[in-house]
Image (cartoon, rainbow, N blue to C red; front, top):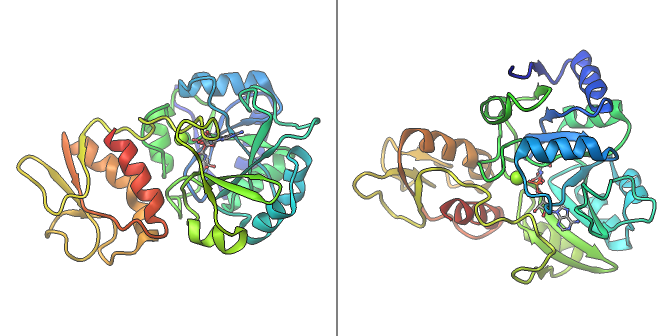
Length: 311
Ligand code: TXA
Ligand code: MG
């Protein structure tokens, strides 16, 4: 049976979702980045059910979603730098990986046994309402089967996971469209683990230069190479399509009639459209050529996802 889809702006839907979560169930919730599949972070059985629903390798730690900094600081050891980053960017598309407190309320399974915990305060009003109604941290990976494209609409969630979960909250299309930027903070040092919906430059304005995660560093165990895999073959940095290829453009130079991430060359618009465009072309064709996207700002996250999708 496919999970019911309820309007996330309806308080009764939020109350129902909180009740399902308290009972150990799984609820897809909108966030400003992508749709998340939420479960009670303190309940290892619920978290095990979540891994099973996603078909996700067990060693992949999850992000715990919280209302704000004070709640985050109950689970992770927040340095002055962590507090400044949260003050600047929460609620929003930034995840902080902090040393876990001894009494951390995010269960070991959700942390994949690590001595750290990933925390994020999402900005979407429905996610905030759900966190308030539930009254504790909710772990939520993107609400898609492992190794498929992340969902940015409720319809994407129905398509990928409708049978495996209990309820879907529809909060409209995601404003940011790519996952949060993940930064590990220890004391006054910060390391970029995953580029995402908040640009490196914005973060560095607060933190100073970010260190880069070394390849294979356990810092980002979730960065499976084929995380964002369409079935179609992807060719990147293509200035024009070749025979048999559909084209995904960026900016004003793209051929007429081609799908375009942002006709005006706006990187925020391109990020918001990225996963929907990939899904659409993937359902229509076996080969996709993608226009070059500048590496600046959100382009770092867009190019990271495109490289992963290209395998
Ligand atoms: O925007 C987002 O971040 C979305 C929405 C739903 O919030 N969530 C999301 O979750 O993308 P997921 O599970 O697909 O990605 C979580 C990322 C992975 O790269 C994982 O390795 C990393 O966070 N992560 C989680 N806990 C960690 C930890 N303790 N240490 C290092 N990396 C961690
Ligand atoms: Mg994901």
